Image 1 (cartoon, rainbow, N blue to C red):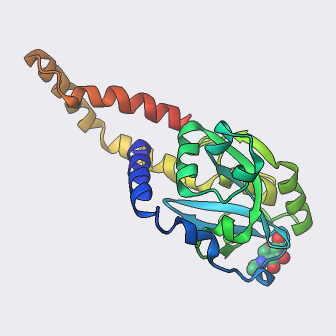
Image 2 (spheres, rainbow, N blue to C red; image 1 turned 45 degrees about the vertical axis):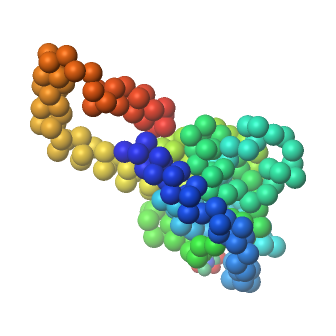
Amino acid sequence: MIALRLFNLFFITSTLEDECEEDRGMKTYDISLYKRGDLLVVSRTLFKHFGIYLGKGRVAHFIPDILPVFTKEKSIVEQMVTNKRLIFGVLAKAASVRVDPLADFAYGAQIQVNSTDSMVSVQPLNGEEVAQRAEKLIGSFSYSLLWHNCEHYVMHCRYGVACSFQTFQFCKTVRTTLLSRKMAFLSAIIWVFVILYIGAMTPLITLPIVIIPFTIWMAS
Ligand SMILES: *[C@@H]1O[C@H](CO)[C@@H](O)[C@H](O)[C@H]1NC(C)=O
């Protein structure tokens, strides 16, 4: 499922967003609305993206990015992380905690503040401590869509726990899907045996050989 989503994501973003990618950082944001240590949330492609406001219009966030894999050139890497860089970063599992101007972080989207507070049962740490925790982690990390992502980073900073609501939701969905499809799975096996028996090597058989290892790679 993730694999399919990612492929969709790539094709949609590479065709549709080429023209407007330049405008993304142009939108202006009123920085007086945010306080040091606030947790900021924006919608980015299919994901929610999270960051910690550090003050003076700067946001620390953990974001996948392919560019540092290819170049150490600071002036290039420091530019806004476009969706294409982000998606290839997810695929290659390359990501880092970096500090960006608010506009680059928000990427044209509306910003929500502290919206995770109502989802967790623990109190947030005070703003200054949150910001300091965020600053401490600036640098490179590996990235796993499920187990180590931008949400874990901000949860760690703001509440002292690393958990991801999106991952939780995802696991729940996968579990329900698997359970409800048990019978479908059985019939699929029978179907494969039928095809093997007939001797036709169709894409129906070869596709899972590609998709399954890819999904495991992304989920790990
Ligand atoms: C977000 O939370 C911080 C405390 O961590 C608080 O000082 C701030 O006012 C909150 N911002 C909003 C908009 O609720």
